[in-house]
Image (cartoon, rainbow, N blue to C red; front, side, top):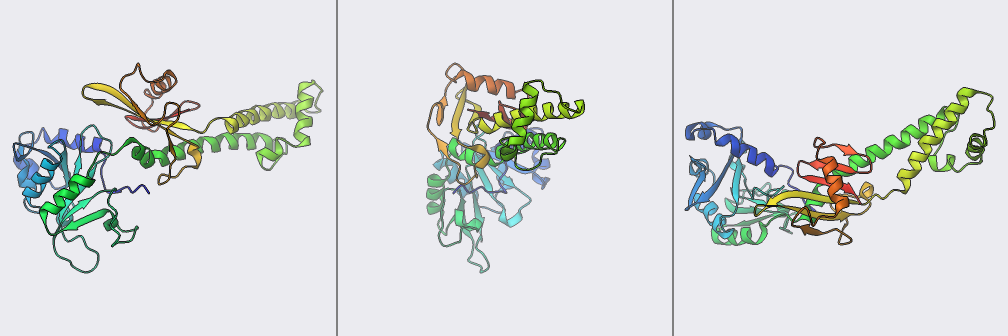
Length: 337
């Protein structure tokens, strides 16, 4: 099952906060209580460019805990805390080239109803804590009274989100967009049929004897008693033909992420089958054709995928183009296979 921390921010939003922090003084940032504080460790010191971020951490979490987690992850990560959460403040861990945070760490009493005392906490979708039911956030947390144990858990569970997981987390939005478009196509066909007195399921109406007779009259130029009715039949057939094309078209899509890695543009690609009927927690990610692999340059990427990404790149986020695909996020695309 794909667990998503609904409270976790997207990495691109955290990086926007980091850019804002570049323009603030140390005192301004310390007094700010409505934004994320973003920082990393350099030389054992928590910094956000010129800001001493240690002043943002020592009141709710031992700074040494964050330092040791950073070391365990080879100082290749950033930390971001939502300072509006008070004593339940989480320190999200991420890399700037990711879409989602890898996990989070905290210090405090994160039990349910009965106080259990402050503990070192690690949160990750990879953690399965069977002491808690699946509908509890604690099901994806580990707890320890010893910092060294918590750091080991962080090293084990706070890892980059692979592209298959990215697809599972984002498929629902594209599924909804595709289904809305398919619903519109069906609706247009039903409205056109209603003008000539035909109602019911499109599959049944379009295969009925009455519909066959009406289309035959059009094809053989047999006159209708009403010119307006004849026009409505012609319009209905156009809509039905469009609907039939969509019924027979592939519903498989490639989930493609475009980003920079080591100074080069790379493309992560997964093939998702039957998108209109997918669910984020059980999306079928296949290793077929061009799917489930990384392409290290535009030249490597199959032309059919590249052309569709190019067409969608001029759309706003959320944009959909018939027979091309959906721009899910600024760097994430779903294109028809």
